[in-house]
Image (cartoon, rainbow over all chains, first blue to last red; front, side, top):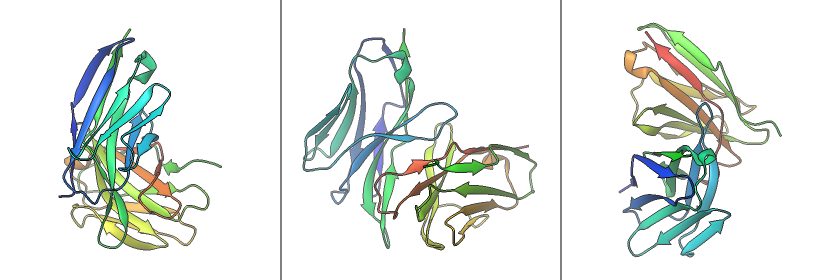
Length: 114
Length: 113
């Protein structure tokens, strides 16, 4: 099943709080899981990524948690700031007909309230 | 290196017309992918080109087509525009299209009246 299910669709968090966005997948052949961040008027940009042989990856205030057995991965934003307000997409790398491609989640619009 | 550029940035067309969007990838990148983004629909994959060949195609009607030139620049064309084609069209490039980091342009905002 070439799908990545992302939730919630939108999220409001107070400044300083923890933002958590979840993604789930079925295809155990996925081998790379990136998160992209998109600000209004811009294209998405890679934020952080993880491979399935690692359970957690942290870069500054951003952490990916990966649960291989549950086929789920999540993005945690610690000490959330108004500047983190953006749309976040999870994705997974899959082998298509002839080459690898990214399968995208539906996106989460995150609003951080001052 | 210069980033991915897309032209035009904004476009207004009427139903039934056709439109061509252009994308210049990062220098040295051979893979170009196109996406349609609408509110609530996320990123819908249109197609990917690598070395002038279409390698992957999403689930869009034949009105949507594309091509890639020898310098890796890419164009996408939408014929017989419909109101539902109003969207942000994003282009992304990557060195070899191996499914790792994609570098997105700012998009072309198409409005169909």
